[in-house]
Amino acid sequence: MPSQDKIRVLVVDDIAETRDIIRRQLQFDQLIEVVGLAGSGREAIDLSQKTKPDVILMDMVMPDMNGATATRTIRQQFPKVQVIALTSFKEEELVKNALEAGAIGYLVKPFRSEELGPAIEVAIKRFRDLQAAGNEVEELKRALETRKILDRAKAHLMNTQGMSEDEAFKFIHFGARNSSRTMRDIAIEVLQKAGQQV
Image (tube, rainbow, N blue to C red; front, side, top):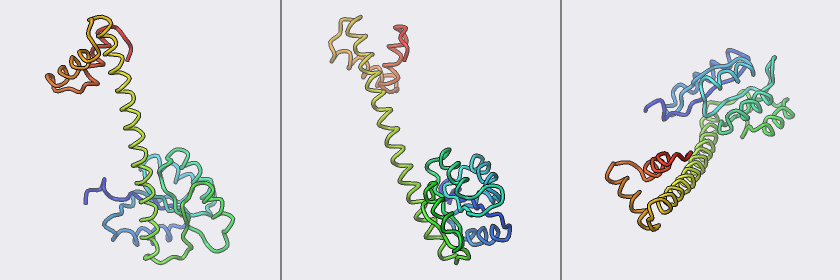
């Protein structure tokens, strides 16, 4: 499977042995790629910027910055990243803080490898749902922008060339078809030739 199709996971824990255990548990999953191991909250923030993970397994108790603070900072920069808190029974307040900071769930240490997969699957489903929603919004925004550009180009042709709206539309449509470009490209060209900002 190409690496771009894999779930990119960042493992954050201040205990090297724990990081290594989690990495080994994940390395046999064909759908997962461990893109980084961080030993502190600050390192998690730095590695998130460099590796762009889909999911972060975040320890809650670390010396320099706790997991809730790191989660909040990362989620502000990368809202689609899904964080799973790693905790112990004694850290209920930190778990609560992590969930409030944007973590979608938690695992209690020590956890079994069979618990890890389902938790990551839930996280990645949410990641992909958010990604799809974001793409849909971007497509709608671009469609609206294109419509405005086409309307401006048609209005220009109608005002300067004496075309009807239908003729102006056909001018742009056939220009796009004959040059193997989009109607947006032709409309932008019409406006730019007229000295208008697009």
